[in-house]
Image (cartoon, rainbow over all chains, first blue to last red; front, top):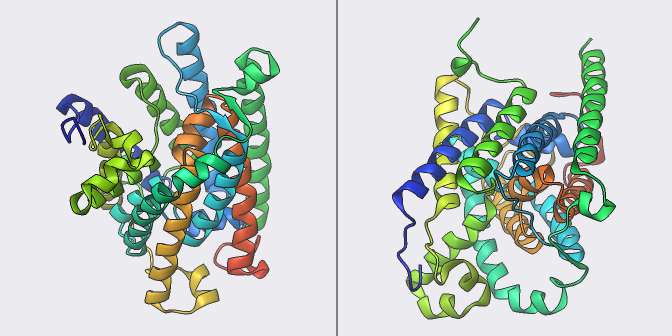
Amino acid sequence: MFDTPLFASPGVLALGALTGLIFGFLLQKGRVTRFDVIVGQFLLRDFTVLKVMLTAIVVGGTGVWAMHQLGWVSLHVKGAALLANGLGGAIFGVGMATLGYCPGTGVAAIGDGARDAWFGLLGMLFGAAVYAEAYPWLNERILKVGDLGKLTLADAAHVSPWWFVAALAGIAVTVFALLERWEHRRIA
Amino acid sequence: MRNPLTMTRWSPYAVGAGIGVLSWATFGLMDKALGASTTMVRAAGMIEGTIAPDHVRENAYFAKYLVGSPGVEWQFALVVFLAIGALLAAKLGRSTRQPTVPDVWRARFGPSRALRFAGAFVGGVVMIFGARMAGGCTSGHGVSGGLQLAVSSWTFFGAMFVSGVAAAGLIYGLGAMGARKGA
């Protein structure tokens, strides 16, 4: 924006748009653009969010780690700062339980016809501006506490990432089987 | 077999697998990871920048995303098209619009639309503040960071889930916890 054009190149924007189009389509078909589904997850009565996210992590992780080992892709690991990750996550959970959408599903919910999601979007924009003002203060006191750099669980444990991918796949299949049994019994 | 595009709802496993495969494409073809919340910073900075450009340029946080890099970039286009993709999916599936005041909210706070809109606004403020402190949201940390086994992302994910469950219990009442759908 400053010292540069406002828009990225048309090719980059087209790829982003195509990704968003598919992502938004999937989110709506998965019903995670719905308040009842998001809040239902936190109320432990609808496990759609967990099913979608765990499946995406296992399927996505399998392909991305395979491509990474072949040297085809570089990773985009965000740096760990444990206080900021944990405290920020806790604050995020409170906001998400109140709003009923997360940032991505909130924008998708607008397309899905949710009127309240427009106010959620206004809140998100306002919140981002508030955060920018708070940033110098937070950066001094919170953001650097527990800084571990761009660490993965595999690095931390000094093992192959495939152990973690396999463990996550095993956990996912077990949890899904238990959930399906529990849901089936609840309806019966 | 019915055309999947016109089905109202897909299996959450199919949707999750689809998002996983989409991640292969963003990493492999675009050298990017799915995310959403950074766009809120860029959008807020661009809006604020129309009124107070010097203030935005001098703010260390806005500067990270807006000085020397375009405001409307890959993720910005992604976020705008999230709404269009969802609109397309809803139209093709003829899915019914959700009530403006959802049942769970109504049971606790009554039928006021203004109160629901105010709640959504406040929730949005709090949520994005947390996302920016943590360095990502359910997409950037949850899906993209989770699949990369990032320590930052799994810390975020755990804290977000525990806090969300506790907050939902407080906000909507413990009686709503674990209840049957629609009960």
